[in-house]
Length: 173
Ligand code: PNS
Image (cartoon, rainbow, N blue to C red; front, side, top):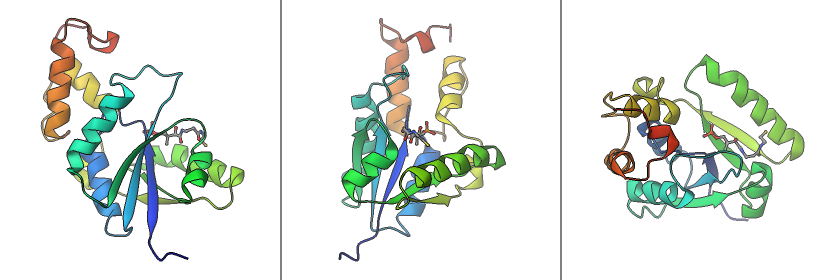
């Protein structure tokens, strides 16, 4: 059996934020490899396409051999089973996250008892940060500096100025 410690860090990453990156960096102190697993959810209409989300994460880690970036659809427990990695990392920003995360961790374990969830706490400066708020602040003209990596800032600008705007960005900035 391999002694390598691996974990999956799943999420929507629409888009990846500095809070996600902080959790990944903390995770690398514990795990040898982290697979950042981006959910393809056919029921949601994300701002960024799956390819864009994957690419932005790749760019943030500049081919770090300890980080893999992957996409998944369907149940997370099935994905981790296929990968043979039964440790899931999630970030816990505040008490408000706890209820949802606790329910998800227990439900995942109920479906597959091999799956363990490890919660990591981000730096306090990211404890209020979410992809949803980043998009809202950007759309309404606020500054998102220090909240997202440069590549995400750039991609948001491009989306916003593209002639074919996503409905989430249609309000005047
Ligand atoms: O970034 P998010 O949106 O908080 O991530 C949520 C995610 C992707 C981890 C969660 O929605 C998920 O695991 N979805 C896959 C479908 C699934 O397994 N649902 C049952 C959860 S108990």
